Length: 442
Ligand SMILES: *Cc1c(COP(=O)(O)O)cnc(C)c1O
Figure 1 (cartoon, rainbow, N blue to C red):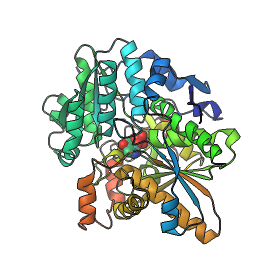
Figure 2 (figure 1 turned 45 degrees about the horizontal axis):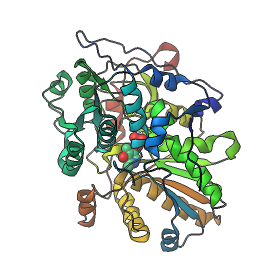
Figure 3 (figure 1 turned 180 degrees about the horizontal axis):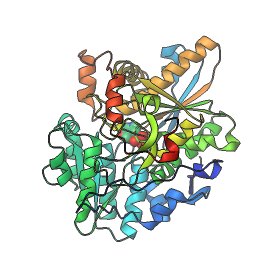
C-alpha cells in the first residue's frame, strides 16, 4: 500500500525561470467592477515557490473518501493492440463527481469556506466542473450556483440532474439574468468564456464568491495528488514512466498528473498533452496575453490561446473547449519542456470504444483523448522497436456521455472537424493590446 501524499507538489519550485506576470485588463467597463475575492490562502498558493504545500487535514480527510485512486495496467488493451509497450492508466472517475476535478473543488471549497463564503458561483462547460463544485459545496454546507454552457446542458440533461440532486442551482448560459449573458444572447449555444463572465457577475450578491475552474495555478497544484500517487504506484509495479499523457482542457488534469514527473529526481519523462483538433490552443494558438473570460475585466494572463472569443465547433469533449490553457502549462510548452498533440473526434472515439471493450471502463470523451494519445504512442514505439512504459490519465468516466457514444455508434461523428487558419486569425484579432516589449516576434 502506498501512503497518501500529505503535501501538493509545486512545479514552480523546480523551474529556473519566472512566469510572465499577469497584467491589469486594458479597460475597466464602468459599473462592472467585478471582484472575484479569491481567498488569500489561494492567492498565496498561486505565487508561492515552496516545493511542497501541505494538504489541510480537512481536505486530506475528504480525499481519503476515494483516494488513493487506482493505477492499473491495461493488459487487455495492450493485447488488443498487439503492442510491446506497457500501458498504465490512473483512474480518476471513481469519486462522487466522476472526474479528477473534485481534487481541486474540495480544496477550493475548504479555503472559500474558511474565508467566510456562503455560496459559490461557477461556470461549467461539459458539466464536470459544476458537478465537482456542487459535490464539494454539499460536503462543506455551502450553496452553489452553476452557469452551464447551453449546448452542453441540452445534450447532457443528466448532468443537470446530478447537480440539482446535490443541491446546486443550474442556469443555462447565456442567461438573461446577468449583463454578460444579455450582451452575448446572440450566441445562443454559449461558450465557457461567457459562462465564466456570468458566474463572475453573480459575486455581486453578498456572500457569493466565484470559484475558478481548472486553469488556475492552484488548481494544477491541488491535482498533483494524481501524479504523486502514480509515481509511488508505478514503483510498486517495479516501473518508471517513460511517457505521461493527459487530455488538456484548462490544464489541471495534465498538470496534476504530469508535473510530479518533471521533478529533477524523475529523470527524463516525456509529458504529452492531448487536445481536440477542434480546440487546438497549444498546437495552433498563440503565446500571448489574453483575457481569461468574456467579461474582459480580469487580469490578463500570458497563455497559449485561440482568443477569448473563439467558439470551437460543436464537439463532444465539452471539458476541452476552453480557449486557452493554464499559464504554467503554457510556459512549460513555450520552453520545450512538454509536448502537445491534437486529434480528431472520430479517431478518439475509436480508441475509447477499443478501451471500453478491453478494460471494461467507459472513458469520458475528454479522457478518451488521452486513451488515443496512448494508443498512438504505443504504435509509434512498436514501429521504433522500443517498449516504453506509458502512463495516461483516465480522468473521468463517460457514463453521462452516452448521447455522444450513441452518435459515434450511429456514424454521426464527423471524420474531421476543420478549424481554418482564418478562424483562428479572426479570433486572435480580438486579443488585447500586447505590452510593448512582448510584441516583437509574436
Ligand atoms: C475537465 C476535464 C478534463 C480537462 O481537464 P482540465 O483540468 O480542464 O485540463 C479532462 N477530463 C475530464 C474527464 C474532465 O472532466
